[in-house]
Image (cartoon, one colour):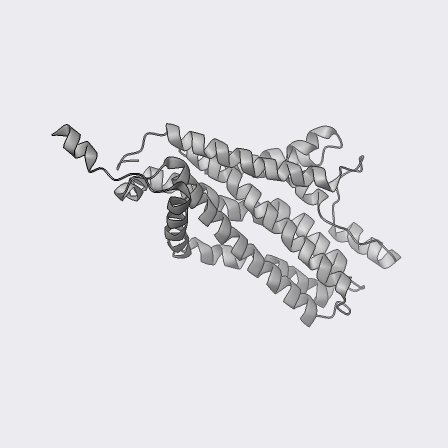
Amino acid sequence: MSRDADAIVPAPLPDLTAARIVAAATWRELLRRRRLLSLGVLLLLPVLLLVAVSLWYPGEAPAGLLLALLAGEIYIPFLLPIVAMALGAPAISEPIAEGTLVYFWTRPLNRPALYLGRILAAALVACAMVLLSQAAVFATLLSADFGGVDLALVRLHAEMTVVTLLGAVGYTALFGCFGAGFKRPLVPAILFAFGWEPLVANIPQRIQEWTLRFHLRNLVHWPAEQTTDIRGFLETLLNRALSRDPVPVWHSILVLVLVIAVSTAAGVVLLRRRQLDRQG
């Protein structure tokens, strides 16, 4: 009788198919979360800053420098970690704690596919929100009086958008790994994003390369300063890291890709080791 029961157990879904199904279900689940509204309001902060600069800054504020400023000082150290905390860590930890993750096994599927599907959906939602925020920033630059728009500005905006999207994926993958390994992943995520990163990223030594913030900022292109007015604008509004030997762009990209890959692989391993039941 046990042989007959074993014979009718369906085979697990192929990993790619299972990951797509889980990602689609998680995408719909995340889009219904009320926290998205709060994140959307928070991601309007760069737009509000641009409006404030256009209204109250007495000198000329070049659009290219504003884009670099927003990417290096607003998105990377503040907005991207918060978005990733709100989406990446709960995508794994919440269904484990609530005991709902087991309902994905109505047909057998492998845990790597389950983890990849959920973290992929979280990363897609994070990227979509960051992309909308960047689009709002560019629309504000076009509508406000920041000078003419040329090909160089469009290219710079595209570069800054790619950097912020890469940062959103990197932080989401890392905090998703925390969600698989910790019962309260927000604690290590906060300690990492607002403890370790700001403490180490501005140290003028090689240790600063052990942060995501440094490598993301290394990808931010700062247009050449041309006037004293621009220099004064930067000195007033921007706290740059202490000077040091430059790190090649390809090195930072490689580090970020490795962080995403290693965090995802570690999250899969951690989820495999978790005991999952209806009580979390």
